[in-house]
Image 1 (cartoon, rainbow, N blue to C red):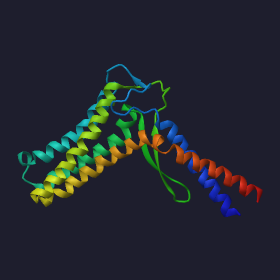
Image 2: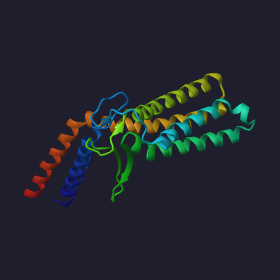
Image 3: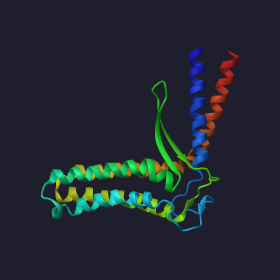
Image 4: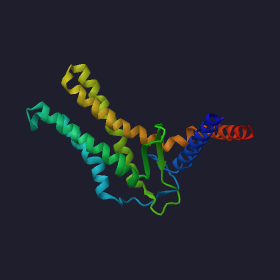
Length: 213
């Protein structure tokens, strides 16, 4: 009895959380979209954030490609690249995504230890709409650089430069994770509406059934 009620409450909570994520995710501008909350002004409202959005990942690429001209020490170059990639991951995940395109993804842990990945988007009636210039800068940087790191990983494997394999995988994983998270912010609501609705109404029916018993 108690277990059934607990399960019904947990399912209902998850369904309501997914519905909120779905409603918020439908209004975030993807690269090339013409959403209502996308300002027609081609201006950069956050120049520092836009600069940092590209700076760390571009610097990591330059150090990776030109390390022979900077230093003969492989360990120093590897540490520098990893630090730049780490700074880029934190900046893109916590700052540039929220300010430039109104998206955010994060992890929430319930009291019972259950982990939930949350994907959020700014409401369409926001007083600070996203500009087309910042949207293009954000998505262009987010998409291009993981592709470059994937190319680097394949080139390292083909040329048997195994010492650079860990660095290439690190760049691909960190930047690919942000790309995956922000695409989920945009696409989650469109892809799972029917499943969320079924889950929500199923939880409601189960709740009514447990009340009657």
